[in-house]
Image (tube, rainbow, N blue to C red):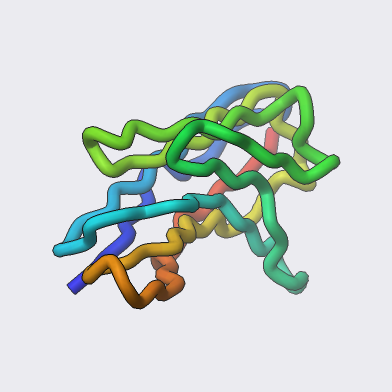
Length: 120
């Protein structure tokens, strides 16, 4: 059984900062890729940032210079540090992981999401 659980969402003022966390649990043996996606109200889900196990990162253009993705392999966690938040950053943020539980087959897993609201 594999689970991803997000935390850290909440209400923040424009220009403020927030850090999201995602904890992976289960009998997995490898998590090659972990990512953050978001889904604004009434819009489609979109990729925010991704990170490989070795630390390579990729960011969507709309968050470059403001957000930082990181991971702690020992704790099986991924983080998203969000700075200079804007109202259009308001969304449900989802944790994603590409995981193998047996070293042979790989599957995609999603968390349930955490709501980030940027408003004054």
